[in-house]
Amino acid sequence: MTAPTLSAFPRPVEDLIPAARDLADQLGEIPSRNRIKKELRVGGPKADAILAALTRNDTPTATTEPTSDPAGRVPDPTDPVLAPDLPPARDGIPPVVSEQAAPVADLGTNITTDALPDDSTDSRRAVVWPVVLLALPAFVAIWSGWVGLGGLTGFGVVHPLPGIWDSFSINSAITLPIGVETYGAYALYVWLSGRVPAPARRFAKWSALGSLAVGALGQIAYHLLEAAGVTSAPWWITTAVACLPVAVLGMGAALAHLVRTHD
Image (cartoon, rainbow, N blue to C red; front, side, top):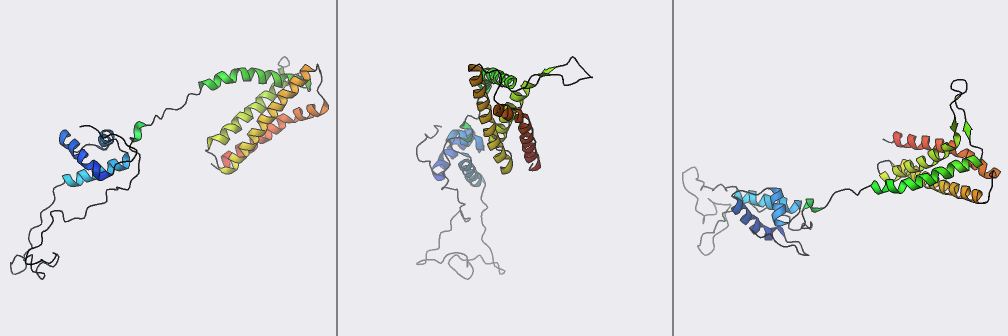
């Protein structure tokens, strides 16, 4: 059987039923829903309507036997008393009774579903590995810029475990790229995920944009100071940079609270 070609105007269901019957004759049985969708190139709703029509037509209809009255007489089709459900005769000619007494169900001819099958859309997700390639050089530049700015604003090597592990030291400047950029990426993810309530999404949106803006300003400040040969940042830059770890902690705790409270 040659499948009907696609057109700009979807074909109604009643025009597709003859082709579906031909397919059923070839298969020797009623085709499945997926087979109807594939062969006739219709969507799910039209396939259901066609399958319902084929199933109804394939079911043998029960023949109605003439009903006898208590006296054993067969009702005369021309007698409105013995056969009240039949239409009256015209000019002495008995009315013709249709073989299909049951009303025909609506086959959904007003369905405007596209003629393409439901599974014809390529559902593969877009690859994300190029993001890793893009992030590597950005990570190097952002890390070095924040660490360099931290060195100009008083951040440096500290011993966080005095008396416990005196030889252990860490450069506190790494808290700037880890805190600011990590929070910005996480807030951006929460905002664009669409899986959180409106308050959490709104907070994530503005805090993510703010974190990205602060990150850009930090990079600008470092490169301007480095290009000018400044060895110590002005007091207002030092003040702003010193407050960043505290601000990141507060925003992170608030966002986590909003996300978990409205789960």
